[in-house]
Length: 437
Image (cartoon, rainbow, N blue to C red; front, side):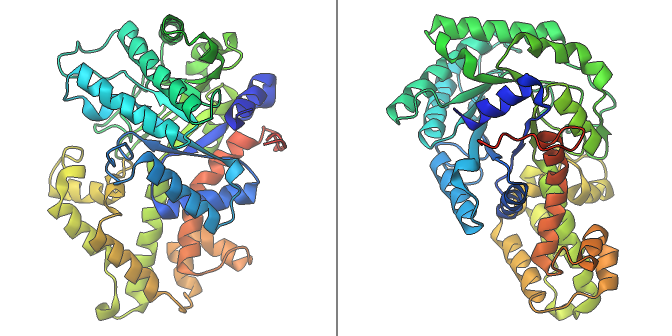
């Protein structure tokens, strides 16, 4: 049985459990995630998006097979068991090719699905909600479902060809917010209408039946909806269980299905528990992880300025600013206002467009120099307290090493721990993860 099917089975049996999904390609974020899951003795779901990774390389330059090998290599380095690792693909469909005709875009989408499934990605989010060149805006539910079914056929044929027949699980539907957070200020959100959620499910089930895929419906484990959570540059819309109660009841009719919640970054620890309890049992997290990573890097930059002479400093913050100004494509259309407001957003926006720049060689060299500066250096406790207050407490208690990498890793893990507490424990803090996983 698929690990994910087992997790969903437990949840539907009243286990109050779920799973969080790490949506990042940053090696330090992934290392932190693997180490946290190792400590928790849990499974780990890592997902790539259609923007990050595709058959042509995506913005990371990695194909699905490249990304798989990249993650597996990181897992080997920290001795994380391969059998507890699940790979997923997010927003797989014509998203990358919306400027092409629907026929051209869907042909590319078929290649995308084939590449992901052939590379061993087990969890496939079929997302054909976006309009292509010449399409009506928005697309009807029937067209979206028909295109998703077309891609599901490719997925099933590829899995069978690779000896993995019956192992692929699916998520359908799309989120209301844009991936990675809203570009404009938001004040409130509409929770997905329960009838709209039911219609999405019914149209997809009918579309699958039309192409002879009746047998995969029990492997559709998730429906993407808007539970009323989101963030913009400086605000977070928090989950309110009462507003999502009617929507929450929809999945009670489906013994194999839960909701998948996107853009859950920056919610409170209690909100994650409430989300899982209300059947939003697949929790996606992305920008919050690299936001915490950036906080860690900036903390080291602050300490660096206090204890190193100017000529020895990596000056990472200044390097980042120079590179982002010289290459504005990944932030300019998202960050508005005057120069000071844009300056603030480049570093501190919750949407964290800075995450697209960490792979830049100039920035990478500055990060390497920053860490090299701290090799063999004992960071003064008062500066730890100033720049890493939570980690300072752990260092004082003997629970954490005070080296630069350990401090940054723990910053990222602070985000993951809240998700893990919601996904793998019930409200009485009892372990809920099936020991067969």
